[in-house]
Image 1: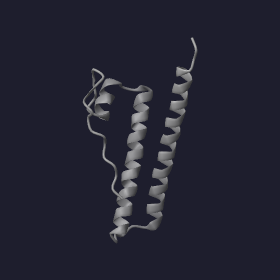
Image 2 (image 1 turned 120 degrees about the vertical axis):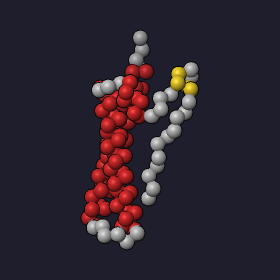
Image 3 (image 1 turned 30 degrees about the vertical axis):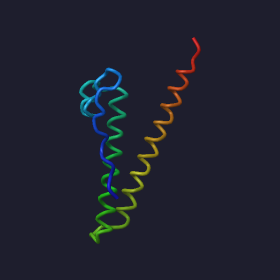
Image 4 (image 1 turned 60 degrees about the horizontal axis):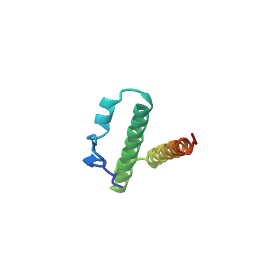
Length: 102
């Protein structure tokens, strides 16, 4: 399995220049919730890369234990489930805020 690469720069959107990527965002907003989310996404991406590498190595006949592959894929799956839940909760919170009547 090959991992999906990062999305490239989308340019100027709505008169606001887009950042070059996560590293540029980190430079603009040190600490806080956004930084924690970016660190979490980087961590999950690392888990997915590790699992992909182990699966590819095992498929190529490398000396990889199936238990290591299963553990790595389970960690990556759990990480994605957590990211998905955080996204869902964030979206629910956003929709709640938008629906507040003033």
